[in-house]
Length: 243
Image (cartoon, rainbow, N blue to C red; front, side):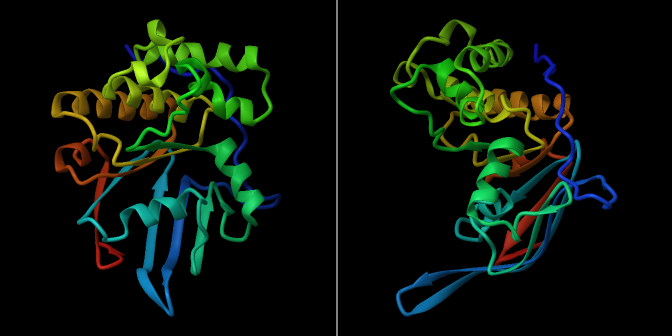
């Protein structure tokens, strides 16, 4: 059974004098391209998107349509060429690289298709890593990580290395890591792409249930319609725009 996190939620990132809204994530007129030799490759063309608190939004579309690029911009991994990305009312686009890195560590949880667990650390250390990066002691970080390992069914694997885990267990660990710092926004990029259908169903149920229990927003990128069907809204990315 999935349990609800007990850590107090942080105050919204809203500047003094501003009025909080229900929107956790807003993308406003986003344009983005990549440099290719002497030219550029346009990827996104005027994308607008809003994800409210407690809402799960899925984006589907063909490979190369710009889904992952959009997710990276939403998480502050890159800055758009034009437009604005707002997290809980605060512009990520106007921050420098350091400011976006702090916002990612403190407010955003990422779940990647490739897991990205550190091979030399055991499971509980991997899950606790965002807390360690935020300055918590190792003991306190592990204390906060352990209830999440129980919630995702990995409490007996806490001292195992990633190489000793199955694909489903690796993704469960990645979900726990994404949620351990009590994020306001969860971004999931093809989180079931490397899993068999039965395991994928279990993983997406766990992820969506956990996100809804915690009352945070989630933006999910997937190529699988059955996975997208778990969301509150499904949008299609085509030719650099959202339909």
